[in-house]
Image (tube, rainbow, N blue to C red; front, top):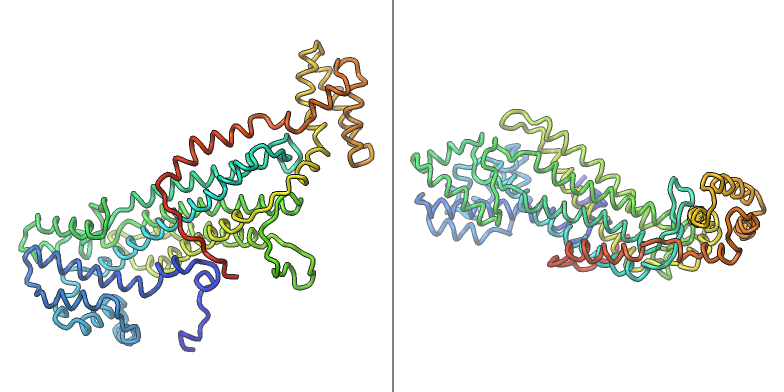
Length: 476
């Protein structure tokens, strides 16, 4: 089977954006290898090694025109991917052929290129997450006072507001944004460390001049845009870096899974609804259905990201001494897929929150059906304030609530409970006072204020200065 006949990963062809897919493409990877070889040659020349301007010029002229067929033939012959690219690059830039990869080992291009791409991918995740949070910010403020039924143990609890629930989701994502930013800023560049991390080959090239070896290492890190370097390493950078990065993506996926699950539950209850295009088909068998397919897809992909975090953890734990190659195949899969899948999650969620429909009337009806039961805590406190015995009133409310719950279902249950309380002189509350106490707006606490405080003190500062990625059309 030819490579072109194989099905590509659905993460690239179906779910992730073209921008993220391009970051983890073969073209981008091997262009970065060639760029690293160019930087190495230019800095070695600047520090006194005999490398001609012609060699530098030819390398610069052939950074992008990679002959992948030639590389594949060479790798099949010699069974080494880095050396296959060295040989093909040398044919494209013959004046540079003798000095390409001079003093370096494979990890110089593989690890440093991975770090460059991972940093850019983290930046894209940061921008996508900021775009999503801006959508959620608008919705949270718009619906900050809209009453809704809150649940604990998936049982009716106290009232909240629709905006407060959205703010809770956003709060988790702000934490994820901070973690993504932290991991991006803390990445350490490997640089030019040699076969076992001692830089012995470069020390030999520069005739024992340690200062030049240090300057070479610093200079390449500067050119790659990294403020921090891995000062001690084996042949590779510490695989704990990969684990911390994918761990941050896993955390974001955990938040996304929770949000999407909540949306699925709420759509079942009719309180919110995903965007649904005019021509969208909900089911092949049931034409009437409007399934929360985007949220379901978020949950599906999020599980994959969470599972991938085990890959990088095991890889970091099982490296031997200065390096071993059992990390390579796993990293080629786990790291790109973690980013591609995270990108897909954020594209989906931004789409959902850009067109989320809030059915405030449904939320209110569901709340009103339960609210006299939910108001019993406030009724208890007011009854005690008016001279009642707290323990006695608590027991009466427990009995009344059970009896009302066993009455015919519907609005009658609520009215029945309030009638029972009003008829009991121990509470010293009229029917009108009880009805007022059971109004939804009286029972949402500081939910609306909490939304405003969260937006002002946490969300807006977290978003300050972060560009947002362009919206991406969904690929179904």
